[in-house]
Image (cartoon, rainbow, N blue to C red):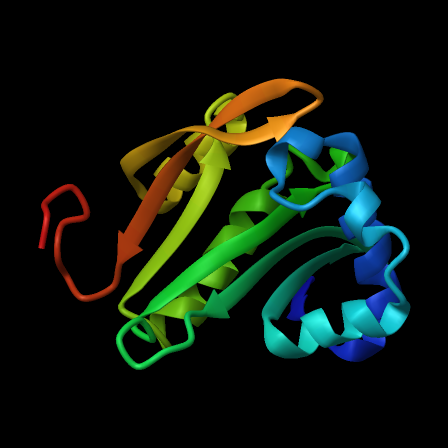
Length: 169
């Protein structure tokens, strides 16, 4: 089952978010150290300011993906898919694709383009996003630094207004 999380889900969201940050620190701009001492109210606020979808299996939250619309008159036509994480037991089950598809459908009603960034070494995520219709439009070298190691990020976009993501506008 997929649904938007609400502030009442903050404890569940906090647990899965911290798990993702701890187990895959190279995949997120934030860190476990930054977020693990945050009060529950901080996670409630995140669920208020962004639309976060949760995937549930037998009542357990097994995956999350967030959507945020950019703020500002000149950039409100853009949105961001962020914070994607699927617990190991739910991987290769289609859960990731369901989450991405939910964010895409949600975003398509609100923005003209949806962007995301993904660590270049995360081949499974790159395949997932490409299969969902995202196109690579750039690469940020040394975008993240974790444990003394640099990670490049792939910049991806999906347009909802019928234009080709591979052509400049």
